[in-house]
Length: 256
View 1 (cartoon, one colour):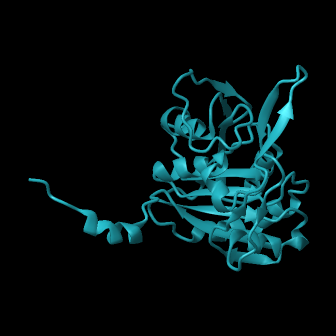
View 2: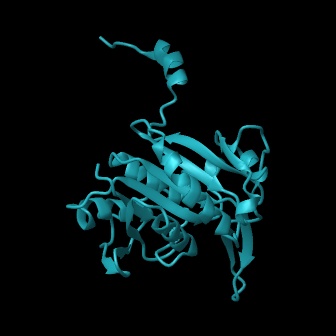
View 3: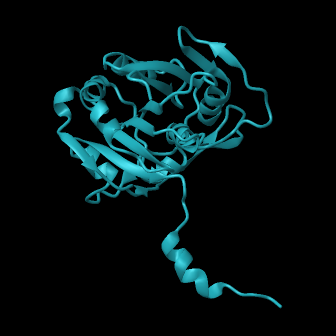
């Protein structure tokens, strides 16, 4: 790896998202990095790890070393690796900063996490970053935290097939108390689907409902962010339940 590390930045909020710009600004302030941005051309929240297989993908110029892809976050990272940066491979992937938390079970739905996971599947150290407040208003603390601490976070070696999910508190730098290494929390689901009626009197449904709540359990990503800490949660691409796999060995049979 060269002294200057090449960072691929993506997200799921789209190429014009404020959080993406903040992440670019933060990296620009840290010596030893150069950046290429490849992100969806429009909003792709909750797209999970979807690939576009039934429509063409296009690469749009979005400025110097900035490209928009007419697809999902996963599409964007894949197009970056296979086309845009084919002859100039990045050293790591940063996805975010997402406009809202990606904690607990929500990492399954998250396009932000999916972009980082695609980076992991391409063999790169990958990190998903989110501002842990619905409708966030102040990215300043997150930017200063990254300028001061991202390099040390990147120094920790990630195992093959793993990625890091980072949730940062909303607000100014002085609101951030420190760092906690956490596990995924558990979301409390309520009124997930809202019943609506269109102007013609026909019913329809809107997924979203009321704002989510969380079980405030010690050691979780939610608990850390609620207490003013940055949450670092290691995730794996391999979602095999190894303990249960061993318990199921008694089910194995050979048929004559």
